[in-house]
Length: 266
Picture 1 (tube, one colour):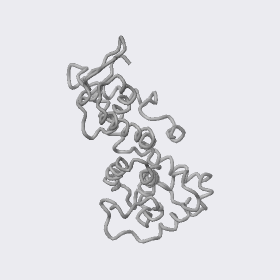
Picture 2 (cartoon, one colour):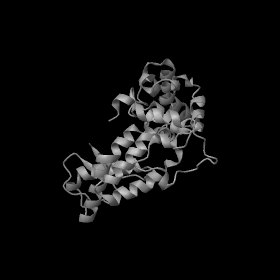
Picture 3 (spheres, helix red, strand yellow):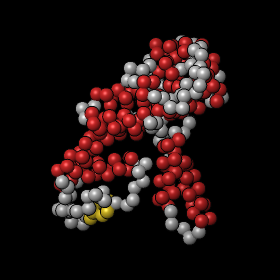
Picture 4 (tube, one colour):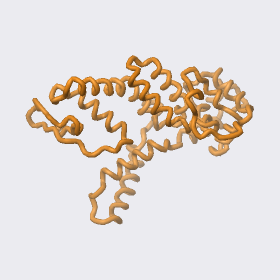
């Protein structure tokens, strides 16, 4: 690690090894939480070489532990669309039992601000999550006959999703529109969920669902691409062409998206 970017709040450096240097970090957008989390992990590893107060060391350690023990798995699986509904329920369960409740409550508040997408329609993603057992999927199929809400929820309130929530409670007749938008044949729903894996209609629908791009993840990757090559060309036209070329190349070699996210997920 030739150069090491240090948080602007911790700019004093001591005992840096020869041929290594520490530099001030560049500006970080407030929304780029993962970038800040990575900085905390680096600070935790090299805290003996930094002039940090006891309070700063404790704060860095708290964030580093949360990222390593809890958040890393959630972030890693974020691109896998079909895992999103169950992951949110499991994340709430983990936060309720996490030892550092101050950190956990702050994380839970942030999570609940983003639960608006767990709508009756998007609950259809869970039908393709292999972690959900057969009995739960049977309840989800039955719930497809349940009347839809009269008014679409803009955001789930705290009481709507808890660690004991079952995914079938979010499924209604409106969930069927999810399969329609996938252009998928719903015929597999008439079968026992234990047999879905053998049904070609299910396989096709699952492939379509897995192909959905998670909005935040796709946007973050796009921003990172622009920032990396910004200013490397002499004109806007060349820059646009370069970004398109790099994006196309990454798709060809499989670097932009994981080869098999289901297998690589923790």
